[in-house]
Length: 495
Image 1 (tube, rainbow, N blue to C red):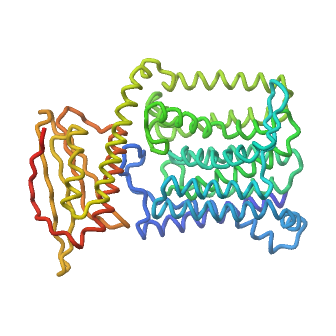
Image 2 (tube, rainbow, N blue to C red):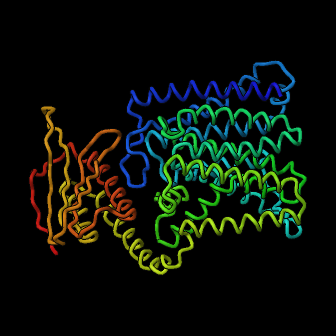
Image 3 (cartoon, rainbow, N blue to C red):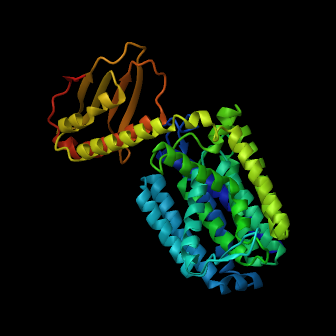
């Protein structure tokens, strides 16, 4: 127990020091998460590399075991597959997270790395071989062990990433998952897994000192994906050593909140015709804030309570008989249905309009794809402007502008401005301005104006405009040295 306490304290202190150092450096160097989207809850730029503190705090006591000649150190070093899996897989996930936080990584790159890491873990012995069934005989996976293991690892990594939407939420959710694994490992006398969970618990708490509402730093994808990776890997090891009839159901229940939120997001986006990996404000934490009118901090505390309930059920499952496990699962199923209904996920009135929303979103995605393809193929800034003009008719704009900053050979900057207007309503103007930025450099801006009486832009339209803006910024960076269009050009739109 002394070794576990030392690991916890070392992780806590290292995470505290690293998180503070990273926060101060990120503020000085401008590595901030901008509050430039309707889905963002924060209203000011916040540093987002706090995951470095979690990673450093977790690995600090583990690295010390390589230097200390002790029984625990020898036991740790003897489990080469477990150590290699955590260190090599963790390093790959951290590298991906840092790249995403600093430069931005697309879904294709993320999944390529995550699947590669998951396959590597499987090769090192992290395997799900049995799916427990408290209502009947267990299911031996056989050849399906590989896909189930890979999907579990990738799924948990992304579940923790998706739940990271409020100050302190992802860290708190992970902490309850860590607590479940720690208690189970300790009850079975598994010193090594207990040590890993003690180290991760200390790292999480050290980070939460700076991340609980109001947060002064975010964990970013570096932290959320790393937490998901460690929990996924350790949960496999914990479940394979379980002698209960529910085995893999225990870690599933322990991570019930992020798993449930991820499944709801996948179903919701599929029904509404949205990109599967787009962001929105329909997650469980967003619904709690809007439907129950809870504050930011109160929402996080309510979700902590829900995670605590999932944790208790997971622990109860690990010691219960098949009949008791079936009763617990049925009870949790009823509770989840009631929660979903209270948060509006089962609103039949809303469901009736889903078909129209889905059709519009599918059409909008096709239109954006055509626009961005034309923008990226444009040989000049004027061609870029002509490529984005169809947005006016598609979105019902009354006024549209595209600004480019051009650097002359003398070093002075001027603006290239394209404008267009069309009759589209007589209401009070509602404006949206999107900064065009690439590699930290501002290249211009898009201005869009509606007069149809709206006072906000919906998330689907915002997502479409973000994709177009990224393509325009990419082309602007490529074409700006050759810019030869005349500024102040006014182009009349066809109705």
